[in-house]
Image (cartoon, rainbow, N blue to C red; front, side):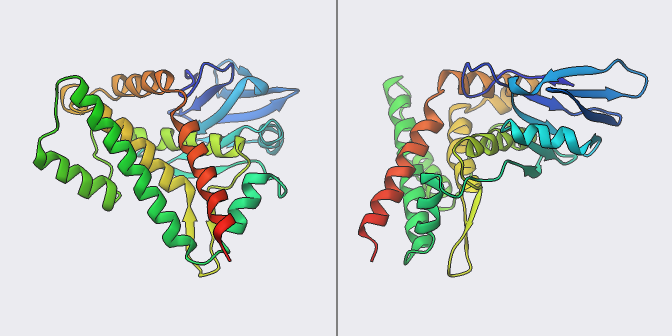
Length: 262
């Protein structure tokens, strides 16, 4: 059990990873989370210092401990045996928060799903073009065949150009869940057509795709997941405004669409 460095910023709040090999009990003690394995000393974590908690099914939560996290805006995400995101618990979304209200209005608009898909496709193209420009500036132009493949798979097929170990995806998505909670929005929004706009999934493809682009060759050269995860954390710290920029662009797109919707 350990508290890992923050991935997106240098903020005080940090993620807490509870991924033990044996069962762990988590209870509340005042403003602390107390995690304890049988026969081991308890570990105390100040909830107000946590950004999110990432755990597995081997962690048994006391109800008051979970409620304490929610009161402090701390999300809890569960990983399966392959470190994929099983689900999450996040604070209730404030019904009157402007972005949440805009998204609820947006999903009621005509062709919401098509507009949403088109915008995220445009944003993935933006990411790929910026990546190509950085490679060109470094004297490493993308061959035409590689460019066509990346454009087809990442932009149009929504397939992440996988370079990093897939076990890193779950912890990465837990970070996105925490950020969406701070934005006071839900990970998914049902449309009137019955389809669902999956904000978490679309942001995952967008940002995880960019990180994998930038890690080109790392997964082949260095198979150690810990080193790969250090790369992810370092890259996120150095590009702390990345997700903020994507969300700001999304907010502008939603607001503009609502202005033109009948």
